[in-house]
Amino acid sequence: MNELVNSIRERFLVTQDKIASAAKRSGRSLDAVKLVVVTKSQPVEVAQAAIEAGAVFLGENYAEEGVTKIQLLQNYSAVEWHMIGHVQSRKAPLVAGHFNFMHSLDSLKLAKKLDRFCGEAGRILPVLLEMNVGGEDSKGGWEASDETRWAELTGEISEILTMPNLQVRGLMSMPPIGNAAESSRPYFQKVKRLQDFLLKQLPQAELSELSMGTSSDYEVAVEEGATYVRVGTAIVGPRSYAAENK
Image (cartoon, rainbow, N blue to C red; front, top):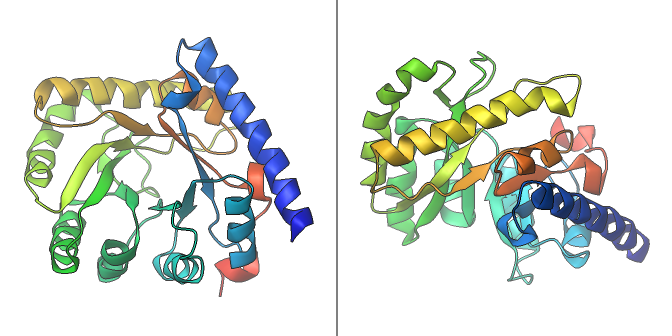
């Protein structure tokens, strides 16, 4: 276990250094960016090792798998568990009852369910709204690729802002997969413009957070304003496909 912790810690610190350098290049401080270590499809031992290596924020894609880890690692009380993947409506109770933060709220329907289940659990869930700025059918979230139609987003977002058990903190997005990190930059820039647009249209909203950037492009994401980056493979290694396909 010590060897696993040490190897993860080494990669974790390298990633933090790269984030710090990217933040400095864009005139920001390291404190402005939070590193979510993605442990989806990894065994609980890897998640535990990541915590012991210094990770404070852990990201999971699958509700049941995440809840299992949360329960097994509940003694690590300082850790925040973040849901970063698509959540089916029937899995909303698991997210509402166990996770500390959600990056991937992708519809009004899901928001209503989460709000109800959070109310029943006596919890308030901070959330980010997932925006599909690449217009890809394979990705979830609100359609936001056409900047001339951004005003159409404000109705549903305004409704979510009134939900007492959800706390909207900002936006999340994943750009189309490219051959190089630089190919993500225009999409990250678009998310930042969308954030600025929505802040003007909805001055009552708290939309300061931007979750964007993964192992392949997180440095570019930081340069373009990310406040959360979601890094898995670069820190904990390739995910376990056996776990992912169980």
